[in-house]
Image (tube, rainbow, N blue to C red; front, top):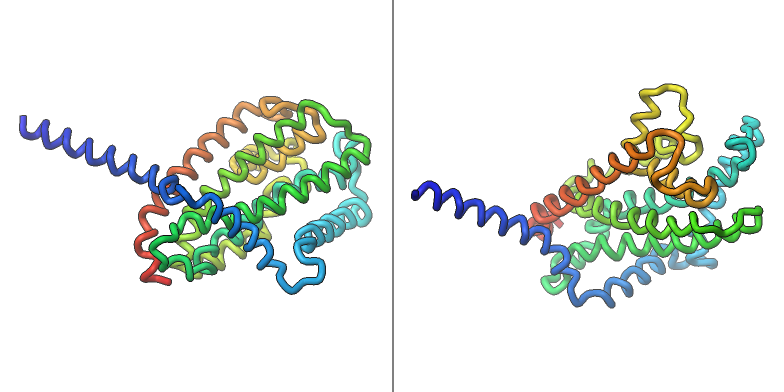
Length: 290
């Protein structure tokens, strides 16, 4: 009887700890909504402070990169249009849209706590909001880039339709996914500069492994095609193309769309669980480290 009571008490304590862990981040964001939006705006201004054209550099950099890829693949390598009628520039541009956000979010988000250490020691300022406003500032840039790209698509002959509404879902999921990823990366990078350097190193190579400038559905090697289904960056690049240029719903596609969505859902849940676990495990030790 005593063993049963003891076991029941342990289960209740464990459930209480799990509940408290998941409520910790929402609790820290309570009453800080205005501050988060203000800090996101200030973070964007600070990034381009001193530049003549200011935040427009956020557009100039990806435009120049797109021009380089267009020249390399279309002019130098004579790359043919995708699926016979979709220009390669349009194909690359739409896949590049989510990549810009994902790349900046991972690169900047992983070191946001270290870069904003002045907030860590303030008891009244919750640490988790640092990752929130950093991610939000990158999302502002993404929205602006999307508007510019959408206008270009309309000028190129693409007409608005119901499929385009999916962008709201894809962009929302993308924001939450990489926001939750920073819950793990930012505290760990605050403890280890090696991890921060490792993330910076792999991001340039990850571009070529994420289906941004190639069609991952039509890769001839079956193993590589299946492996790319586990890359969330490939998922969002393909998702944007489904919505904007392929006129397909998220459950449609060329290669096992049901597996693609199921894999992402599992990764989505896993990233949130690991993010909550790592953040709650490390947050109390951050002031001592920084």
